[in-house]
Image (cartoon, rainbow, N blue to C red; front, side):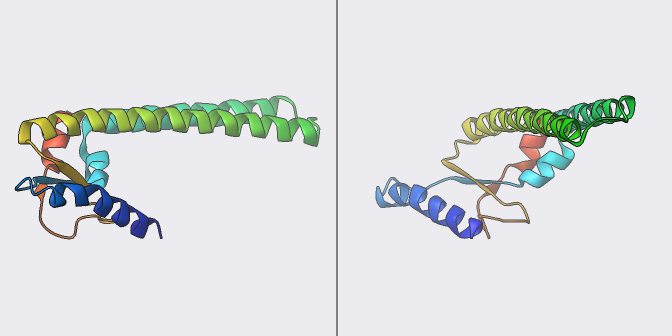
Length: 143
């Protein structure tokens, strides 16, 4: 379902470009999964995020162990606080990842004079064939 809505959104966004008859459209493709696995700047953010999440888990575990007579309500409260903290960390680091990747993609788009960049990752590709693959250039920018 999500794939269909993405494909429909891409088609709607691309339609005016083709309808305007403005000539050739330059399409770039990006394998986001590969960028996340290979780009050092992205891997560093992921490693930092994992470290902070582990610290939050260990902190909660220490609190549980320090107070074995904790009531079920207190335990539930601590668990909820830990979940909120971890969700906040996840969101913060996800935003950092997106921002870093977007800056690199925007630089490549300007260099290559691309009109559109579409996701070509194996999970839910929005490009089945064609387009200029900019994955390697984005990974290079994120060194």
